[in-house]
Amino acid sequence: MANHGNEFWKYCAHCGAELDLTDWPPVVETTIDDGQMLVHSFCDSDCKAAWMP
Ligand SMILES: [Zn+2]
Image 1 (cartoon, rainbow, N blue to C red):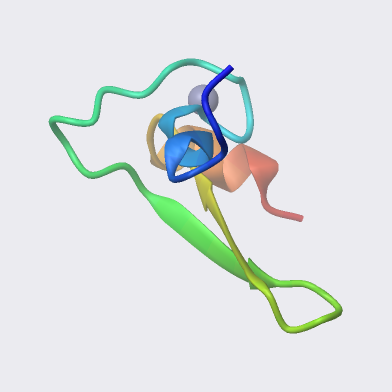
Image 2 (image 1 turned 45 degrees about the horizontal axis):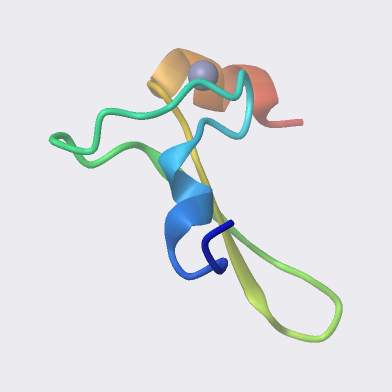
């Protein structure tokens, strides 16, 4: 298994589909308790909208 690196955002945070990185996917950045930034990426704006609270 490859180390974490930047791999996490190759997959949609909503449906888990592997993303086509030829186009920059829509992303949402969130900050967790210790101030670390997390980036969540999505297939498209529909998945992004469905995932957001
Ligand atoms: Zn998706």
